Length: 442
Image (cartoon, rainbow, N blue to C red; front, side):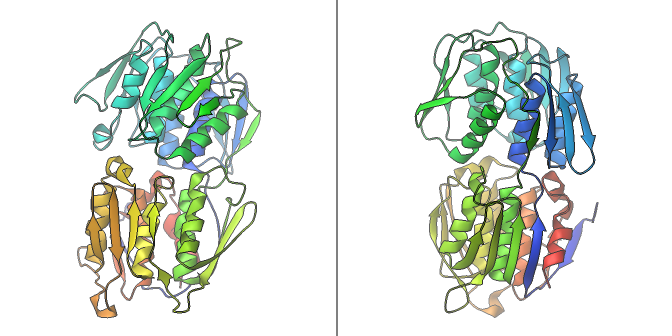
């Protein structure tokens, strides 16, 4: 599939089988950075091998770290004890938000000079709230082009954490994650971070806190909007746990779980389940509320068709603030539901790899869906009749957004084949997606 401008797939009627999920992107990039900042050597197992995690690995290598990829998605990182060996670097971060944001904060603590840039879309993705938070502790960060967006220059500065650090939480949880991971490096006394306004995507913060604890730093949460980092007791704040196994990617699981509902199933995903630390496992609950038959164990989830008498999913109204990535899958699953599906609190879609609300609305309309979009919501209703389903000759555009490509593979369970443009964009998080998809559909 590599390099193909488009692929033609479907139509399909049945999905069944099992999928071993790739490692979680969110866990992988956090674990890579924490392992790099820790004292000691960390062996990361089931680490995601995709564009976004390679961006982080390559950046860490440029900063003087030993990051060694081994067989079977194992990566060995020799930590630097909080001080990157290289004090000046020009780092290309692609379109990896989970890499550029926490790395920006960690670099601001180093007392060196660094430049971070990415592809054109990265230069449209906001970073102001993080920069404002870092400037509160003395960081010197300059915008190269447009204020509030990369590329940025980080200049050597004397960091002093004297007051409460405040950060907005309503654009992206990654800004808070970045501060949580970086400020322990220079916390000569306890540091309090307060979130201004709403904190979206709280489950991603919980991932950050749990991983930090694995590396020896336990953050307390006196209330829902406050986080207290303990004072450092040694030069090397983070300590390697020796080994860490990355669980499967719950966002990637959503496509196969949806297949199990619309394609009859059973489809089982292996690598996430009841013990998952990822918020996107709640996608299974959303699917169940639409009428899907869902069962789960410690590290697996299975969907076996639909329990509704009419054999169709039912439309729902749902607050998606805690499952922003997996919510995209619900938008396409709505093509196979009776009645409208309304996804609320998805304003963060606007600042992702593309404007996902606008992109999803446009492409769903191409296949015949009835769609309403707002600033922070989308309503999707299936085509009124089989004859209203369409297969656009120009294909489904994916906007260099991996999730658009993976989501619209589900639409091939309608009556028509579909052309999906730029399918290779899935390399960002799931390079083998279409090969795995082909194994379970017919």
